[in-house]
Image: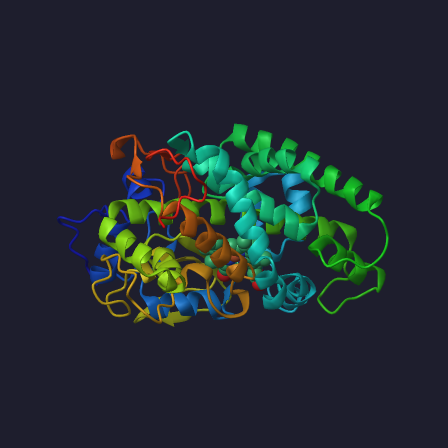
Amino acid sequence: MTIQLTDSPVPATGLDCLDPAYQRDPYPFYHWLLRHDPVHRGKDGTWYVTRYDDVRTAMSDKRFACANVRDHWEEMVGPGALKEVMRDTIFFEDDPQHGFLRSLISPAFKPKRMRAMEPQIRRVVDELLEPLVHRGEMDLVKDFAAPLALIFICELLGVPYEGHEKVRVWSLDIAPTLDLVPTEEEIRVGNIAMGEFSDYLAQLIAERPKGPSEDLIGVMLEALEEGKGGGERPLTLSAIISTIISVVFAGHDTVTNQVSNSILAFIHHPDQLHLLRQDPGRMPDAVSECLRYDSAVQSNSRRLTEDVELGGVTLPAGDFVVALMGAANRDPAEFPDPDRFDITRTSVHPMSFGAGMRYCLGAILGRLEIAAALERLIWLDDLRVTIPEEQFVYQRSSMFRGLASLPVAFTPVTDYPPRRK
Ligand code: HEM
């Protein structure tokens, strides 16, 4: 099929994820693709999938694999700590090893355990916000969303408070190497950070008191002691370290970005903010709508193990496929009037947490964090962004969507919490 690319944001050479216009605002690109070329061959030969049902297939069908993405990534980062440590990551595994690692860490994500964290999440939100709201201004990303995400990821893992700042820095230094095409400098810095992070975790594990513990590190160490296996390889200490670091990545930038994307959506839609203030019982639907409208995770990559037909196109074995969840979330066939931010939508199932056997294990925790943050932030009067949108700096990423910084101002609060009587 020949595609007419006139008036299209997508160049005739194919989609380029590094295009700054796409990074700033991918939605016009998604709409064009959904309408004209829903299974699209990008500039570098990668397939981009946009329709809700196709994205679900790409994220859950075993023929769209992850283990074979590893070789490509290892080639990109070359030898060093990044390659060594990430050799065992759950993100680059297929079954049976994926299923084994997932079943190993799942107990730490039990819904009951996550829900029991709710009062603690609310308390941390208050501890972070109380000193900020008197000032009448803050950087919503740096002062609030990022620390919130980090505290809970460390809590879940069992990393003590003194280690939080180090984990934050390592996490930021490693992130660029897990995405897009890292520069040589990013790889150099990422290798140093990965080496230090894994040494720190090895020491933390060695110094931990023995005995059962509910945190993720404890759960995995118990399995190691019991000699649990079941995947392709026996569990090792390095697999545990790799899994811990993977969970940090899975839950850090994601929550940070989703909290700031969500509040930004409310700032841009004061009618919806008003609605939520009037009826806070809408919070669960509001969180789903935030996830749908501007997801922190926009895409995930897979590689085909065999030829697959999708949307009438045959995708050859060995090709890379990017499932654009951000596009699926704006598919008009699934969500009527998809560009409208509308918290009165019900039964919304955004693609933002993925699908199938890799569905996000931290989805409950993530939702609770977003809800607890919104519960307080929506009551800040005259909440506004203090820089023009042209100055917004989105993270350079093919996978994540979020602002590096979001300066806001509001009427200073004297009585905390800021909720109106
Ligand atoms: C708004 C916040 C979040 C979003 C949007 C998100 C999104 C996702 C997505 C899309 C996947 C599937 C990846 C794939 O199919 O390749 C995933 C997997 C995962 N997420 Fe999340 N995530 C969030 C928060 C968290 C948190 C807070 C944690 C942990 C504390 C977490 C832990 C994980 C883990 C361990 C996996 C791997 C599951 C597997 O491979 O079986 N996520 N997440």
